[in-house]
Figure: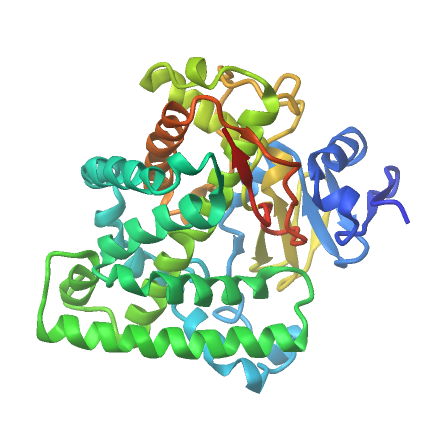
Length: 412
């Protein structure tokens, strides 16, 4: 069965997301979609998806759409099924997630957290990120080879976000395990076993965080979690469930996408055959190269939203209140109407912003941190290992939402 079939006239598309030909290199399929119908009805998903850069960017900012729907309609009204009892702990952890909330709850929560993630605050982490990058490379430089994801790409961001929050770095293996099990819920059609496992991970994660929060209340410290516990807005503080949800989101998002992006970037750079030394010759060149890695090898390919009311879009698509739409971030990043020769990796490209971090109300709060980690860690890696190369062709994860590698074996 082919990975993709397109009826351009009817704007109907069929994609087998489990076909390795698709999930290993989705941008080839995106080229066909852009050529025939950048807004399309995905047969297997039974909903509309959007791939064009301008439309994705506009819909991310369009307040007629939201990340949740039950604040404006009941399950009965929308014909939605009841919550699954075996996902009680997962749903509880999601209930106050910044990623899922709409104003005014989102505004209040984001305001209390945002201060720690503005660029001037994040810039203070530069020495820590530099030191940690060198320390990690010290651990494997003499070996002549390494599996980079476990030893570097995972360890760096989870250590930094744990330190920021004030969570013991020794907990990193548990944090990574819980995170990996939880994010499996975001792929298409997770199995019952995946749901049970993710729910247990949420229960364990929430229990651990409750203990940490209780300790911070007893012994406040100079960290983000203490700041979230003690901050007020209009006389209100974050509740216990809000603190747990927000901390879990920051820990998960604070490393999950960055792990994939480090791996994707290193693979992209090495496969390009271009000079890493030239790419990272100065801060300006580094910034452009990092943005090009984010554009052409984005870690997250889909962001979903609900129509908050009956909505007619300019291109003749009619949506009912409660309909979900999919925004293909990875496809928007390779739209030929926005980027010249869009599938080519050009580290000096300067043609506008990618949408890998989203846009609008739910623009990724951790984007400044992720960008700083990439701008520091990638040049250090290639400076320390100037002869590094791929040991073999990396295997891409069988998970379309998250575009990342199973492992990344390097030699030098």
